[in-house]
Length: 201
Image (cartoon, rainbow, N blue to C red; front, side, top):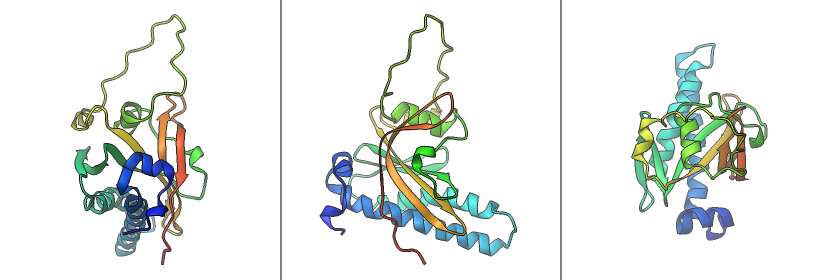
C-alpha cells in the first residue's frame, strides 16, 4: 500500500480511494515494460530498434492491465487485440509520445484516424471550444473503431503519456485528459501532471 498522500487532488477526483495505489502502480508497470522490451532487444541482437519498439508497445498494455487488475472493481477490455484496464469508469491508456525528454505538450498522434484517435475523440474531454459554424457542410465523421463499442458510452479516458527509449528508459511520464486537434493531430491537454518515475537500474 502506498502513502495516502501520494495521490494528487486530480487523481483522487478521478479514481477515488484507489488513487494512491494507481499512482504507484502505473509508473512501475511502464518501467517493467521498458525492461522487458530492453531484454527482447538484447535477446535478438539486431542493430535496429524494431524488437525494442514492438516489444514496448505490447508490454505496456500487458503490464498495465496485469498491474491494475489487482485493484477492486477493475474491468479489463480488449481493444484492437490489446487489453486495457477500466478503473472507476476511466480507461487507463498508455501512449509513448516521444523517445527523448520533451514536454508532453509536444505530443502529437501519428494519425488522426484509427483506434487511439477515435478513443480520444469519443472518451476524452469535451472540446474547449465548440465547432465553428461556418455555414458550410463538413464531411460526416467516420464511424468510430468497432472495438470502442466494448466500452461504456460514458467511460472517460485517462492518457498515460510517456517518453522512453532503449538507452534512457522512461525519462518523462505524465497522465491526464486531452482532446485531439484534428488538423495537426496534436493533443490539447485539459489537465496533465507528472507521475513519479521509480528509480531504474
